[in-house]
Image (cartoon, rainbow, N blue to C red; front, side, top):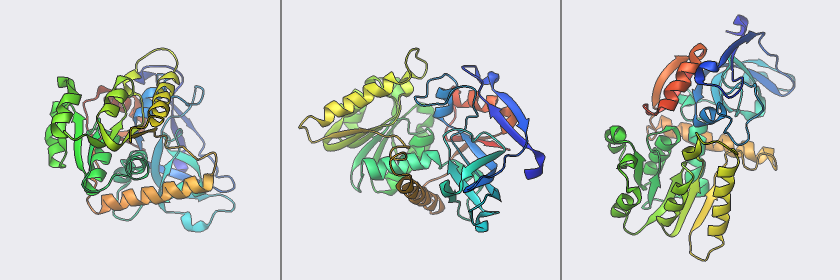
Length: 343
């Protein structure tokens, strides 16, 4: 693969999925402290759906190569990098740049993928798994015997979060469309049809004493409804604004509104707490601690997959050259699990 040249997908501006461009070039070189990873699997996440609309709150200027994470094999190590990494399968969180056949990554940012996991299986739980693990265990600190609500429980993050919560001993209520309810029940999740209306009323029927944690990626009015469902001592973790994906105007405003609400709620003497989760929080202040935390948490998620506590749900495998098709499929909302792009 290394000798075949670079192939990457470029997002040129605010375009339909079919507006993505394929670009070829020379395989990049690894600088000091860096490695070149030959991509074996990368994914389509909600971030790319927002980015193509210009709606991701800190995306780079157009044009750029999207791709939030990847799994692949280290083919080149730069100066100052131990040669032991060569030939290793690793995972990396990059935010942008993953939709390419070869990606340059700082060596300290790669996490080894354990034997027994395929590249596609590992890819399903990189950004999704880190997000789910950190929200569950670092933000909400969910314990056995508690009851939690996961919005979008059939989605990429939601499905991993629901499974990790079940593995932690929690009762899980999950919102999803009716066609996903059978699969959720098989995971031990109590499904609620978000399209049927009165979601809050149905959740209260299932958890009359209130919830110990709610995980909300919807934003907007849903955040307020989620807050009201908490029991005393409960935690709301907001981590997106999916409900405003197709809105016009400022891309920062929906997030700022959520942040303002969490600050207000936390100032109230009501025994509940709220936070907005950002996977990159703390990176600028202490990169060493950030890397250590990410490595530890992703390693825990990989171990959970290895134990069968989390099933790697692959919705589709699509070649990188057909990224437009993959993005269109992801945006259709008709699939469960992760859409994986392959070289």
